[in-house]
Amino acid sequence: MRKIELDDKIWGELGTQNLPELINEFTKNPEVDSEIFYELVDCIWDAGTCEPAFFVAIPHLIDIASNLEFCRAKDLWSYLGSWVSTHKKYCEEVSEEILDLFYSSLRYAEKVCAESIFKAGKLSGIDAVYLYAGLFTFSKHDLGYMTMSGYKDDLEGTSVAKCENGHLNDVTVYNSGIAAYEEKEFPSSITVPDLTSINYHFEKIDDNPWLLFEEGIQKLIKNNNISKEIKAHLRLSELIVKHGVKPDLPVKYAFSLYGSLLLCNGSIDESNRLFHGWDKIICQECGQEFIFADGWCESCL
Image 1: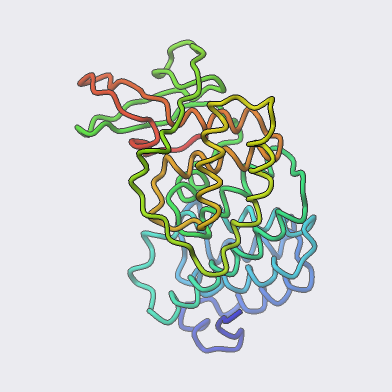
Image 2: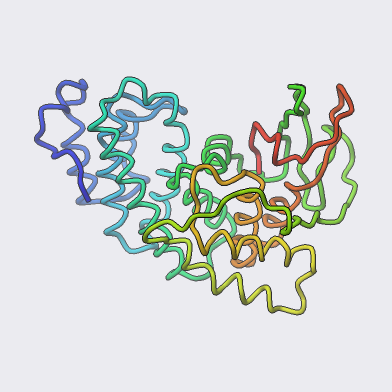
């Protein structure tokens, strides 16, 4: 994987002369609960703010994660997904050469992280939420950016969606549906995506890492214990993984895939919250009805 060498003069120009040494030390002892790691993070990322050295350092950290056993790499992959999710607004001041290396490293991260998740098999619930969302982040998709940057440990909570007239609506995302903020949980059926009216043009991407998850999704489609509503989301997800995730994939389709991947992992409650992203809600200001995922603009899933 291409990256700027640690002895390049760019580190000094970015005002981070000690960062190459920190990266070198972290390579020798890649523990995310170490003082070296905390010092390294302070140099590149602060509460959602990407420091100038961020785009140069991330390829090195991706390289480190890709060479670790999964049990040690998974937390670093989760951190990387969270950091990368906030990078968009800091790109303007970054040179084309550095951005090219940065995005090349994200493509590599998408591939290696997907392979690692696939080989690992069953994940803990919290690891699954982070790592699958991280894959969307590495593919430069908004679902990953919004989920990881707004992530809360309590996956059930408030979120915000905007109607077509621009009105913001606070809602609560429950396992069994979406309700207006502070309204009680009112169980609703999972909305079935209409596969006959898909208006997105799927194109296969080269070296598609998402294809690894096709077999697991197909097994659930054949499972007689899975409801027809959820199977519709699984079939849509099967179509997506055959082609791969591109940045312009509609967010509601990404909700289906994210939910399907979590369901494949056995994370039932988490997957239900994603499937309910297709629920229609009514704007509390103008009464317009719209699909939550179409207007989603703040995450807590």
